[in-house]
Image (tube, rainbow, N blue to C red; front, side, top):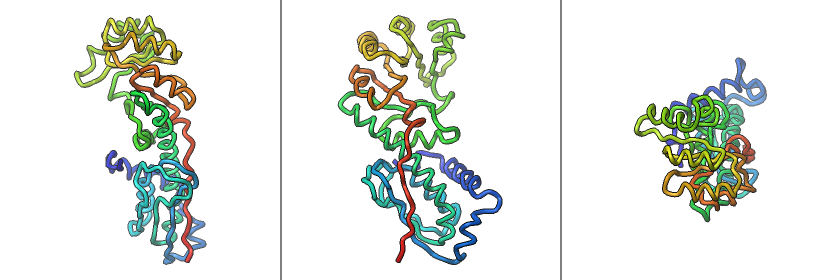
Length: 284
């Protein structure tokens, strides 16, 4: 996995905005006051804890936007699982530039590595089944593309990126549209032939109605494990099933074993703790 997953302009614009936020109007007054302008330095970015490394290209962009002459050497691949105390990148060049870009670079790498690490844990828990882990739209505003990239670095799949790339009929859509059949018929009439249609159900009776009407995917919202097993038996050969709602480390294995096709978890992006990465100046 590389950052070629992105439009490079998106990456640079996002990092530039983060640097603008941090630098403010006056720039890094601490570094400018304490470090000579021509001083050179070498620093190592290292994992304080074990986990999956993700976001190094964003970190590199932060350093290079401050000073294009800085050398940024990745020491591990994106998506690599590393033990604690592993060096993941080395930066060399102007000391002021390194210190000024440090926090933005680390913020991106810590956040995305945390998501990738939590995702990898979920993926490992269901590896003995055919279920695939995927993310949701419960992402940090303006960081969705990067957070979904981190989910892929962790070995999972992406759900839709936004409101414009797939139809997902939720309970409120059903209520306003006048029921499951009305919502499905309207969606299928409006959607292009390449657009998938998914609908959320809360009960097995609703699932029966969807099967009769037809859809590409059905989202089983907050169903019990017993209900999911029944749903799998009912839907086989008709629609693909996605389990969602309150998915966590303690429940994901049992849910996968029901036979559902997909398991979506908002926790991967809204609740993943960071992976602690630090930057250490090399002395001597």
